[in-house]
Every structure is written in C-alpha cells, then in structure tokens.
Length: 384
Image (cartoon, rainbow, N blue to C red; front, side, top):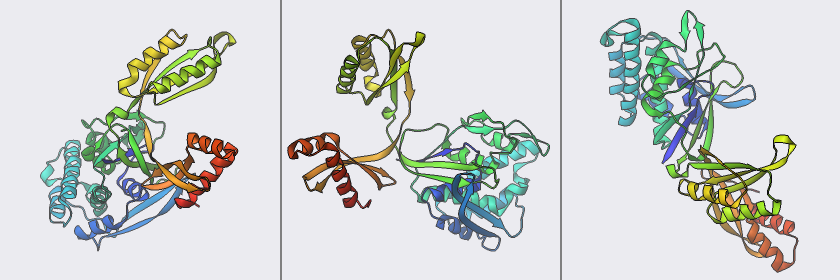
C-alpha cells in the first residue's frame, strides 16, 4: 500500500503540503484542475517553482488571489459540492472545512451556519485543501501519516502560540506536539485540517520511493515540510535491536558468535569497539531481529557469550527497494544487488560470494572481479 509520511520538523501549511507532494513526484495538473472545478479561474493564479531555504532546496507553491472574497461556511460547502472533482476529494475537503468551521465557531462564539471564516474563507484555502487531497489521490497515496508537530510558546500578534485554531482543529486526532524555541506560527489551520482528516500520527515502516520538500513562505533556513512517499511494509518488519557490552571474549570467539547468530536468522549483527569502565577495551554487540526471533536470539546471545544481560530496543526501518539480478560479464553471468527508489535503479553492488567464486575460478584478484562486475551492471542497467 502506497503511503505518505509528513515530517513536520518546521511545521505545516497548505502550500507546504502542495509543494512537498509535487517535489516528491506529483504534478501540478490536480492544482489547475481544482481551480477550474471550483470556478476560481478569475480569482486565483498558481506559481510552482524551486526555492532554497539555507542549504535545503525544494518546491514552493504560491496560490495568489486577485481579491479576497469572504465566504460563509455554507458558501464554501456549495462551491465544493458542485465542483466536478472526485467524490473522495469532495468528501475530504468538506470534512476539513467543517473541522475548521466548528473550531472557529467555538473560538468566536458564533453559529456555524452564519459563520464567516475571514482569511480562511478565501479561494486560496479552497485550492490548498482540494489540491492537497487531489494530489494524494492522483499519486495513489492510500494512507497518510505524520510526525509530531512543533509547538512554540508565547504570544504572536496578541494571540498565544501555537495558534488556538490549529490546536483545536487537531484535538482528538492523536496529534503529538513537541516544544520548540521559535516564536513563529508553524502550524496553520489549513495544514492542521489536512492532517486532521487524513493522517495517523506515527511513522510507519516503509519501503522508500521518494522524498519531497515543500518550501514555506518564511525565509528562515530549513523552513520546509518533508514528505516521504513509499510502500508500507507489514507491521512485522518492525524490528528489535538486542544489544550488550562484552569485554572478556576473544575476538575469534566473537566472530564465531556473529556467524552463529546470522545462521539462526538475525537480520544483521554488528560488533563495534567500545571503551568500557576502568579503561577496558570491549565490544558493543548489536543483533537486529524480527519479532518472531527476538526471544530465541536473545537466549542464544545470553548462552553463547559472557554477557550477564541484554538491552532490547524496538525500532522502525525505512527500506529502499532491493532485488538481485544476473548480468553478463567477461567471466559469464554474475549476481548483483540492485537498489531502487521510486521504481528507479539508483545503485548496484556486486554479490560478494559470487565474485569470490569467480575470482577463484579465473585466478583473478577479487577487487578486479568486483570492479568489472559493477561496471557491467551499471552499463546494463543504464547507470553509466
């Protein structure tokens, strides 16, 4: 299942969502289609271009309005309901508008039916909402996830931070707020509403296909929203890292332990040099295990090492696409591992054991064989 994970390290707004999705591979046609469907062509223009915020580059989407026409909530409903947009998009836009309207009604003590949303009733808000949900649909995104949100503390233009509307829009959604030192409004009501009606607030395990950055209006370095787009992998691919510190085992015995743990099904085993108490030299042994092997691998590590205890840490993984293929070389067929992002090959690596076999059979230096196999694979797969 294709998913999007919004990493809101610098907040979120409607235009940042649009920029991030386009930067991750979406096209601008859904934005233009939304303007046409909502009959806003005389009121709205859209500019999509690249911008930098410090060392970070991404896509900036600017939705400009010729004039600001304030609309009541009922007017917004009517405009969306009669628009020729996919039903899924219409439903989410109306849900987002209702979420904002209910919050504004509470804040201002007014009835929803006659409520004016002021700056949130403009055409740019409609385009942000419709464009975001339409882009997700066209990109095939079936589920949305989001990171914790930055929550500044203080006053801005006489209002508390975070903005009351943004916080209330996200109430009850599972959104997590984390303290930040800035005094800027980082989460806008429109950005909050997009997440409120579509997102689950956790980071999934996923096979990563693309990353996009949507640039915000402020010129602050790093002012961007990241979106990770990929395929969610089954929950059981969340892994546990089993760790222990060892300072009284011979290196060759540790090497045998690593081989035995890998043979028993560990996803990976690493041994890192460490300086332990009283200046003793030791090793940090880390074993990556799938859910069904945590218990047996933990017991094996306790039985076959000198450690008296281990630490268990559950972690999530972000995986690039990978596959093994055979390529034709001057030695015959050889196996290489292929790394992919977004369905495109971005790197290759020769399979060590296959290259070792070829080197023995042909009496060649292993380094030469690995280089020749890599060059052949890059040519065959269009990387050189």
